[in-house]
Image (cartoon, rainbow, N blue to C red; front, side, top):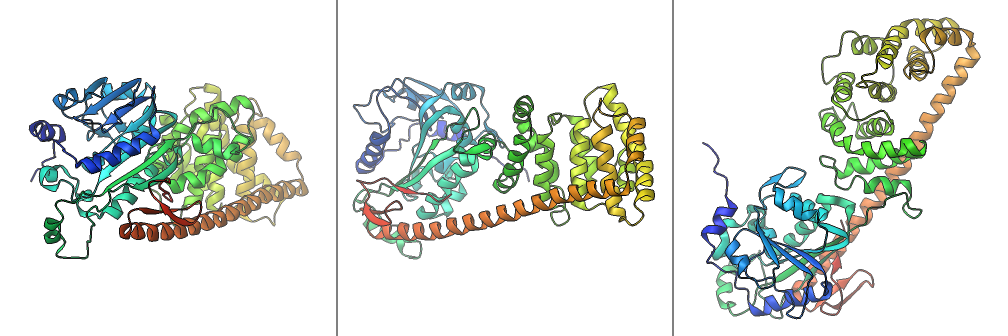
Length: 522
């Protein structure tokens, strides 16, 4: 049976006469919240705009553009300076809202994005939040007010997403915060949640089977209201002394699609080390090529995580992007797949390379792969000759090393030989195959053992850095867990007394209307 997709624009057009009609006490709370963050002269983009924006009557905005589903409702909104009908549920996965007019709007740069009572109807909130991030100026704020699930179920039940319908109000707060986190990650800052429910608001009790019957008695009470918000973090144009190279690299990965937060955390410090080793021109090229990371990870996700660990994936990704010649073009991605065994290896290159380096440790194969792959796809005949010289030179190189170092393990022979050959022959202009053969023939057993020892010392240093990183990450995960538990206690306390809220800066319960909301621990 063919799945019938919910047409949100048609739904709202068919129900254009049905107004939200918020309780005045709830609307006042939203207006008061806006008054703390919106100022005269600001430019504001409103998502899910309808007949009322709940803005302070004295606020004078420079520009207030509404994006909604029903033009007639937006035309009835006196706050809007212009409007556009956009289906916020039509998106491009991992990118954003799929609408050319909306994309053009987002390029204008807004001081604030507001989205009241809309998040509960979004099928793809992450993409909407991604578009919102792009629409904001650095330092701009996105404010997302929403109501308790019992606010208007009879009016708009069909339009509610199942996730929103099934979750409690407490869970809604956490989920709304996660949409910020999983849209642009560290590109947001100051993520906070607020319970702005009016005094004597109806209280949700999911454990009470008679809750719906009780609700009839509470019809004169206002529904609960909540807000989650965050600001767009400024993207540094150059390395900042405070955040360092790693912070600069992370900022360039905020909006990369496909990449899991785990992968960003693993690859960032490795990319930072690669960046620091380059000259200024190659650093600029590397930053330009960070956009190829999703292509790399789209292939790596198919790898067996037990044989090819997340750490190894991060190292390969960092080594590839850190090479100034890696552009992520089709030839390079295709050769990476052949080198990883995700595609049938080419008979004239990857098949012999795989056979001749079979004894090498997996992490050493990854390093070699990262050195070889960027050499493909250049369209340069000299580079193609260098690749041919490399693959044809492997066997005689190994034979020379075996004859000079008869006690050396085969895995070390292959490691040493392949890396010496790659470093001299694969880069055009360094050494021809003949020049390399003369140089290798002049090395003694002591020379070769010294080079191998030096190479392995780099490997041990990298392991120590990885161990340190893992320990720091475990400590951070523990801190976040403890913070979540503490704030969950606060949420439950707020249910009992809506006038107070936990302030994590002081560690005390304080009056909610006088203090800011609590910081969500993402």
